[in-house]
Length: 158
Image (cartoon, rainbow, N blue to C red):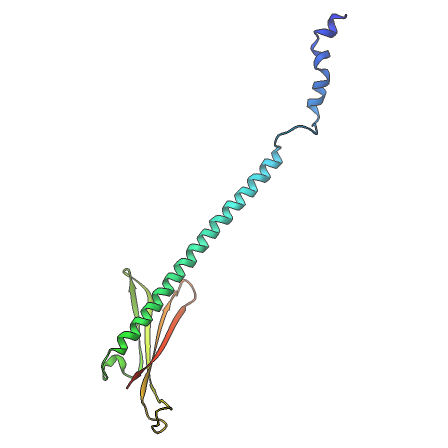
């Protein structure tokens, strides 16, 4: 037996050192490229989720204001229908716009238009003013976004 071959570091570790220098096919682990690719995918997913949440929140806020505007238009129609004939709110023409305060802020503007209306089914002469057509419009969203409106109409006795 040769003493140099048995205890020699070069003899026992020689082939292993050669394997460390070249990548092995069976090695498990994560390369730098795989780690970077995984990080990029995770960042894109988080950014996408954040964008989705902010978009959803904006939609919820927009529909909240739309519901408030619809409620205000219905309320104005009810208040006008309870007015007595001759009230200045029911004079022919356009009334407003007036700010609509919601929680201390003017989020919307309301206006209404009163027009003479001839009911053709009641048997009176054509052109006879039988009723008043009231159209209430609530507008919101300007100047930040394009104006959006809710419009309701009703017929009131003259």
